[in-house]
Length: 327
Image (tube, rainbow, N blue to C red; front, side, top):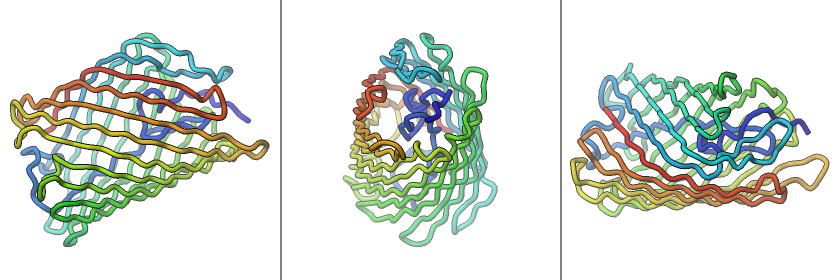
């Protein structure tokens, strides 16, 4: 089996997917979901303006950066200060009663003082469509991202994510599909495509208010690569609770969030019985509104993965402070 010269990008906290045994998985584009009912949300939610954007900066401590080299699949167990900066910008090019079309770009940089070779730059662009069709709000996002590790371009990711949001006064259901092609520039045999289907259900505590809700999610995915031994299937249920203390995004209002996911991942191996992984992830945060467009607060995330292969097992805790601005 070919060993990838890339780092575990997900282990660095950069992706929604945990990586395959010998490959990395860049993060797919986040869906831009537009809901029809008017809700008590920030006065300038993303997409309401002709030009909109967001920026966030975080600093914290990482107990396990999890770098892997081409010749050693064991993690280095490096720990230390981690910082992250992300910027997004969008422009609405078409808009009407039925919906809108927008284009956007994003860039981010993650720095690890204890493991400079893990510093990662990522940038890309997207085209997003969102429509309003009675109780159903369909849309789609087409995106491209490039990942540069230290000074080397290591991967490109191209994603297409259609979705449909079924909106009610006390609940919202979001059906999503995704196809993401991963091109590993230094290891073409590990390149491949992730296919997944997901469903998220929001139970609203109050009618037409999404800032206080319970989230239930299910996701099924399959990765098919050039080197078939990297292929896997996964199943991921999740549970979350979001609660706003206060009614409006002004000084004194605090948004809290608690989310947990459990993933079962099974690898296909042509020569052996294959590998099985189980991963539990929990994240909590509290964001205090400083103004109507800026928040700041602490976060903590803990991850534990077990596997039938010892090298793939790890435990990790990330804790820090994050500030975000939206306009």
